[in-house]
Image (tube, rainbow, N blue to C red; front, top):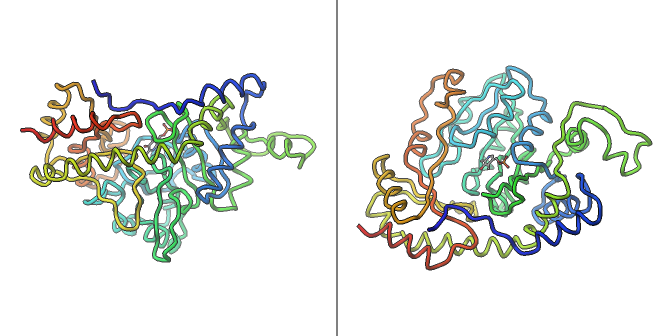
Length: 377
Ligand SMILES: *Cc1c(COP(=O)(O)O)cnc(C)c1O
């Protein structure tokens, strides 16, 4: 049996967890939280980093930080996970869904400008499969219309974008804010976990307050104020040290994890090359401006029928591939609220995309077997 995902342990998780437990600091914002935040900030050039209990929480923090009010509009792809939208819906925003690109499930940057009006407050690009959206285009549009950009970088750790200035920047360091996920299905995991990168310094102070239940406790611990109290709205967005100590073991090994995943990805890509061309199946395209963090290997079938056949064939060989994202604009919760525009490219991915097994411990021979099964008729 080859599962779709298998959480990888570097071996140090229990050790750091033990340390956290027996040091006696279990609640949030301790040694391991600081280590993770500092490392990620240094390594990827993010602004201030705050660990959260999920990417969902990081997105909710972002919605509070940009002060979303009922009636504000936020533009995002329909082909994404529900949390991208929910975070803004919770604050009363109207979500305006944009269609995806034909060559990539990310948001079609060329459709954005037509969706902007006086109520628009933010654009939320999702770096699908860890592959960069055209951030130059998105930032230019946002700057022109005075909008915030919040990168949903849930899948995008250790992936980069090179803009027209020739500078290579980490995804999640470009928008005003960015949200990452360390859910067990992502490259770097903590069971459940996430992070908000705060690249626009105007949000730094308030982010820390919202993170700590609306109090200035962080400033108090640094000795900047002599008592702490309720100074803003907020929630409990920070993870305990049990989560961040586990995460630290993963972060320490990020280069190794990434190297192995990219090898798996390349094996799929090369092995399936001829077959996909013959079968008119679309494979991931990494633009020159982007890098590949091998978050997922997906194929896009030519129709739903072909997808069903392929999924069946894999399943009957005990290989668990999955599909995902029922388009949000046709979801039971949002269909009635959606403005009625057809989003055919989104629907196409929704109907035709397959994610193949992808995890660190996947063996070359297993990938070879998957390739053989797919390519045999
Ligand atoms: C995984 C994911 C999320 C949610 O992450 P959690 O950490 O589970 O909250 C949000 N957006 C995208 C695009 C994701 O892939």
